[in-house]
Length: 191
Image (cartoon, rainbow, N blue to C red; front, side, top):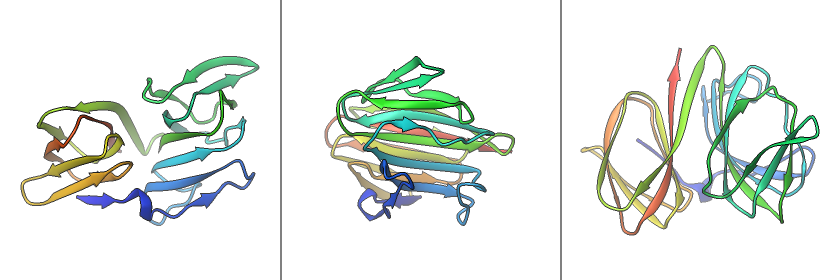
C-alpha cells in the first residue's frame, strides 16, 4: 500500500493560467502527459474554457467541491457536475469546454490510455467497518470526511481529507471511519 498525502503533492500551474493540478498517480512512474497509461489527478479550476485534447484516452471526471461545473460540446450543455454528484465518463478526445457555475471548483480526474488500460470509478460510503476487495490495481481517495483507517492485515494507514491510497496488486482492505465518510474508488486494469 502506498499512502499519498494530498498536502505533499507538487502543484503544477496550467499553461493557460486557468488553474492548478496535483497529480496523485501516474503510471508508468516516469510518464508525462503524452506517454502515461494511467493518470489520476485533482485540479483547482479557476476559469472557464476548453478541455485539453486527450484523443485515445478514456476519462472520468467528478466534482469534489464548488458550486458546479457545466460541460458543453458544440454549444450545447452535455452535463452539469456537482460536488458529490454522479461521476462522468467520456472520451478524452471530445471537444468539451467547461463553465463554472459560481466561482472556483475542484475536480477529480482519472485517465487511461485506450488499448493499454481501462478503469472503473465509483463512490463508496463508509459509516461502519467494511471489507473492500480489489482484483487488481486500485486507488482510494478520501473525498469527504476527516479520517479513515485502512488495513490489509499487514499494514495500516490513516487517510486524512483528500489523501489517497494506492494498491498496485489485488488486496482486501478493512476500512474503518471515525465518522461517516465518502471515498472515490478507482479500479484499473492493464492490458
